[in-house]
Length: 151
Image 1 (cartoon, rainbow, N blue to C red):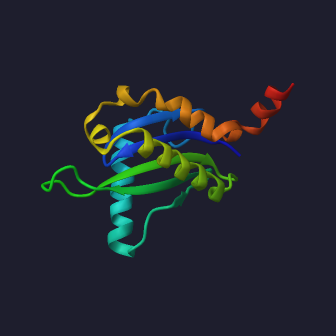
Image 2: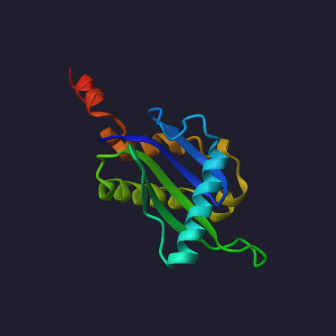
């Protein structure tokens, strides 16, 4: 039960990526490509099913998402999706992960302005990674690593 990777995307732009373990889902996959995939999947889910994307279950992994709609900075732009996602092991409880993703997004939106989120580069958000780690706690560790840290 562990989070293998966690990220925050603004639409098709990756803002933060935290890799805790390599996953079978493509550890070499470009974060921008993953962001585009998640945006397309959310748009498809909304258009076709009238619902939001929450959990995608694969053979050995799950992709858990929490999405906030941000107001556009100017009237010419459309609404942007701020997506916090986690790639987790199959047996990981998704409700617990969703709760943590929601908390991460709340802290992120309290820390950074909408203007900064839309206009700053990934490097600007680097300091937030330690906040993510503290919110997740040992949820980012596999069981064997949790035991190793005790002994």
